[in-house]
Length: 94
Ligand code: HEC
Image (cartoon, rainbow, N blue to C red; front, side, top):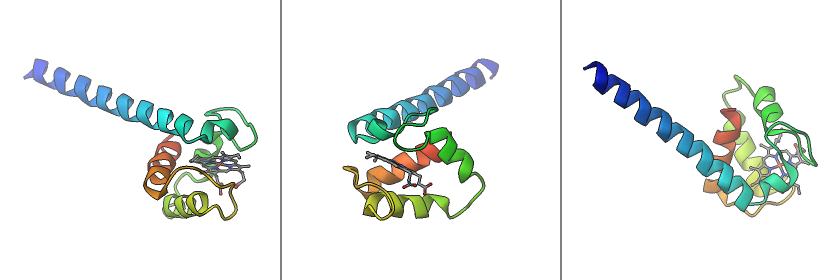
């Protein structure tokens, strides 16, 4: 039972790390990282600062997906709405 639990926890953490890595790769592929770094300000704010700014705001995710994917109040991006949603979730979880 104990061995099973350890195995389950190991699988869960690999899955989480894998998802974060996939999102990071997507951010690179879509050009987000040209203007955003995880913890340094570039042309755009550091992604960790964005996460901190919206911490605990329930409507932040929907608002940011709309803002970034429609290009209103944010430079136009190559990511579609679904990809932007994945990226915004990843950013807000930092
Ligand atoms: C051409 C440069 C540029 C690119 C490319 C870019 N951003 Fe930004 N981003 C900015 C700037 C500048 C700001 C700060 C001004 C603002 O809030 O719009 C910003 C702000 C943001 C914010 C916070 C908005 C807010 O209201 O606080 C999010 C979330 C974001 N970017 C996500 C993304 C994602 C996801 C991508 C890739 C699909 C991306 N950005 C690509 C320049 C860029």
